[in-house]
Length: 248
Image 1 (tube, rainbow, N blue to C red):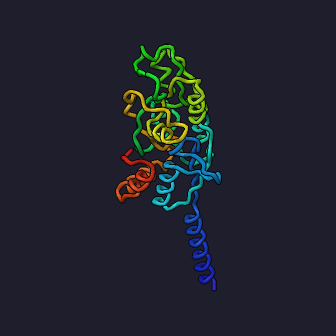
Image 2 (image 1 turned 120 degrees about the horizontal axis):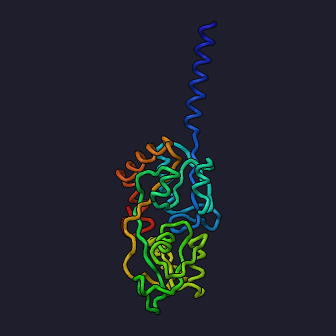
Image 3 (image 1 turned 120 degrees about the vertical axis):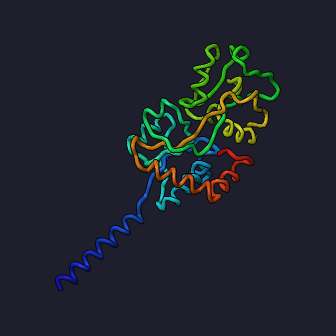
């Protein structure tokens, strides 16, 4: 009888452990204001390239994932405060950010390019931009580029990319510098039809990674899952849903 109880108890513990492992849930942090990479649909659900890549990675890691949204300005502090487990929100890998978080391998490559009205001449060299008012999102590579490289340009920084577009269409900006693929999406919209890319990309080596807390072993699991979704075609399927070209 005693042995039977021990066996029963061991089986119950094993079952409970297995159920707990199966029920593991991770939280992924997303800004949800940066289409087509992340935004909300009409029902308030988070959608976009980042969300779908995150879901695919979670499926490979055999964990359930939920989304936690955060304003861009506080998104790294929110990660480090453990409000979510990893941050997949089109974040550029920079040396400054590496001081606060660890990054996975890049999951896509980005370029920075200006947009401005089609009917206005807009040269992108430093001298031609002198005196112009250019918009960019705050705490992004585009914003940093403008502040570091265009001292004679009035740079207006915005809490969201959408607010920058609103000021462009209202005539308060001469142009915008932003991620090429975000601009690409906006130029297809009704609001963006009167605008176009200007000049060549000013930055072509921008790599986008998933941020995790310093030393978190989830980084290795995410990297392994990323390799899997690239190898089995899952990544390409998601890429092709949003872009007619590869951004990997």
